[in-house]
Length: 239
Ligand SMILES: C[S@@+](CC[C@H](N)C(=O)[O-])C[C@H]1O[C@@H](n2cnc3c(N)ncnc32)[C@H](O)[C@@H]1O
Picture 1 (cartoon, helix red, strand yellow):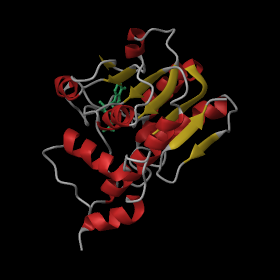
Picture 2: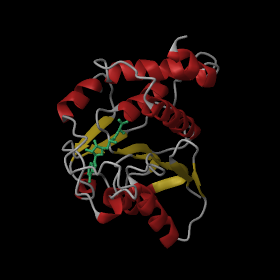
Picture 3: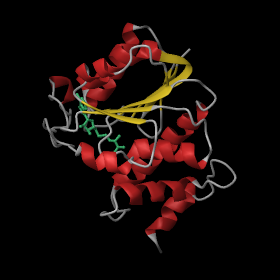
């Protein structure tokens, strides 16, 4: 039996509109971004990634009616950003979105004590890991207008954004405590009512700093209206 069939049991019947099958879209994005790789269904991270993409897509579609831009912190080679941009294309969503895609393009920043996994057997990531060349990502997005790649370290890189920008969708995927907290502090007040902030690694044992930053930020604001998703992400819809 093809391992693909297992994934189909979950996702085969999921259409975002009458024509757009979620898993077909997901595979086309994977093949575009990682054309040199084969999908490894024996690896739990494949299923986790598909699941996260599903929730990301659902929340992304949910903000379509709002005014505002898209911000992603943590781009790597552009998988999640390309998924969002493809959804916009394939579903003829609102075409005036600007996408601000931020990354050091030099990998992870400093690892702080908050980022060290509790489980001593888990790998401790190092500064500079998860590095991608900005030129590779520029090529991936070259056919698209309104994509702005910004290279730099969070939080300093935020100086390159217009502070009057308003965001309807923010995807946080920088893994670590400090840039997650800095991103929330920068962006929360700039998110429009009904807009979404979603963080990728809330439940990741490898990156415990993500959850610490998320909780610290929302505890400090006494905001409880966020949801931990079954995919391991966490999400808030701004009141
Ligand atoms: C998990 S990857 C992002 C994955 C991507 N969203 C995807 O769909 O493949 C994390 C990214 O965060 C970036 N990053 C980590 N710390 C950063 C910081 N302080 N400033 C800017 N970028 C950072 C890394 O360079 C890396 O590309």
